[in-house]
Image (cartoon, rainbow, N blue to C red; front, side):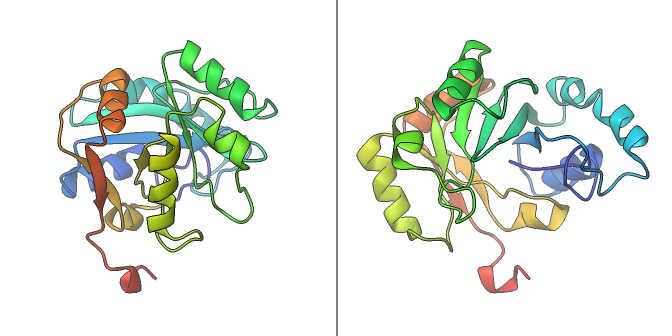
Length: 207
């Protein structure tokens, strides 16, 4: 779960990929927001649009690591569509968004579901057919409680950086004990509980 200048990230695709490679990561997902009109790192909206037109294809054909194209659907709550390009409407209920993502062969993952601004309701989070949810330290409920809810409702945790710049790729990422090469493989690994959080950069050094 990371962003580029195709939404509100500070750098482009190549810099995020190169930083990921330098950290030894072997899979990533580029999940720029579904909103338009955010061009923080581009010289102009036109330049950014030209660069972003090929981003999904770049990710799909990436050979240096496994790259899942994705979108952070940015409605009342934020929902990650992993393995597909943009196209799911922000205004739909979460369950309908998830159904559309699944129909296209993607995974539907709740982004920062306990965020105070974009907080999921229990019905949206646990009964919308989602594939996983982000479990994040430093927010309420505590990480241990998030993991307990994950086990209670059978909704696997994923541990992502939500990086908007290269530095934050170093703060937190996910490791898995089983290899996979596609979205179906990722889902199988998550369902098996074979992934965990890695935090190579201490929290007190994140600022």
